[in-house]
Length: 86
Image (cartoon, rainbow, N blue to C red):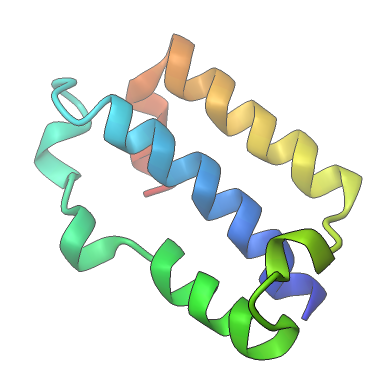
């Protein structure tokens, strides 16, 4: 379950960054949120394991939070680097 909590934070940051940069020349050709989005499925899994208030109950390692922060930074400063993570 800890891995699932980490994946939530990672994909939350990644998908937000991709959404913000959908029209960027490097991102646009690989931007298919309906087909490739994972966040909604992860949220359903977390609700299954933790219940309705899962956001208040999950634990996320500090390393994961640093990685998510880095993804946001990359999305802001170098959107083309997101392609490798998408």
